Image (tube, rainbow, N blue to C red; front, side, top):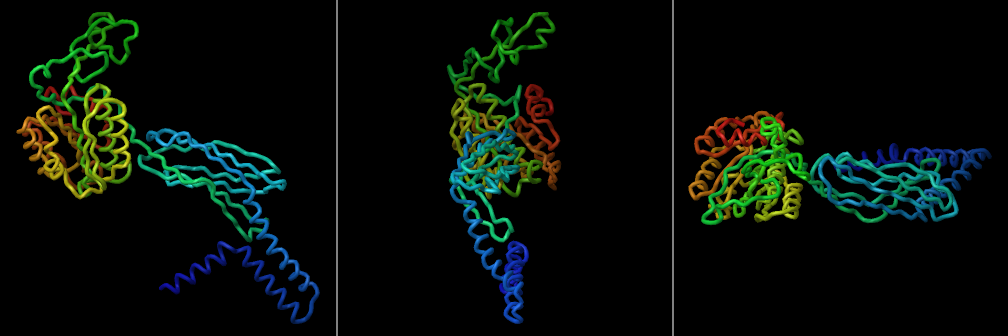
Length: 421
């Protein structure tokens, strides 16, 4: 088998990759045979021309990728899914001879990335252009180094050079804007139970007041406005001490579907959306997941915490070997009476519901976002788990593949009131 593979590689190299060189070499060999056999002068001169042309073509190809100055500017090394990744590439010919054709390529494993162009450069000439690619999938990707390839006029030789070093680009998952996500409040003792007015949007609405210049339009309470005839805005209160933990299930066997239509991508997007919602409300949010690696972020507030969670989600892969029940049992000591836990999972194994019940017995407030695996191409059904969660008093959102997340997760008021999501 190894010999067959070697023969195949040799034939591919000779007949495909170096076809022009093979033809010229065969023509040279034939010319030499005929010239030595009968002394035909035309074959002799053709052989002499080819003997000079082959090394000249090699030198030409070598020269075309020399005396070049290349620069690549990549302003962003972090961006969000759906945004554009932009590069500015400049190539300068430092020699006094023209470069007839140069194939410039910036290779990358970023899906949809395209930065390839064929150019020609005159003496001391410089060419610059922008390459824009759409980041369509979260993750960590390598970009570069830039590769320039050229060759001779007859296509016998190709030479390549690399410029610069490889860089990495981190693509964050895109979060959905949630207008109203309900989660059970934690039990706060003493003064911690007192809520204070907040100047920004929080999960706790306390009333309404008249609109004042400078108020954001997304704070307008339209029902009260329609009833009174005056613009009214919502008042919010701050819950200062409770922590919100977002627990993402990345257990491999529990997942269904692949790519953007799989439970993994939907669960990651849901986790990013919920974290964004509570952090914008100035709540302390922690993150926990066990996939191909263990991810944990202790509860914190603010934009830096959101960035850390997005970085963890960008690298999250559903290849874990620890089911959600095991993760909750192992890390349960982190959750106390001042904690609201939100589990995100497609698992149809009811053992993790038991783990939530045990945490509830310790005073942990619980909510779950349950993905229906059957709608993602899986075999199991989430209805039994949904029933078990309802019986355990766990606030539950049921998400299907075709659902609009902003609508399904934003129906928090109905869920909190006992309705179905």
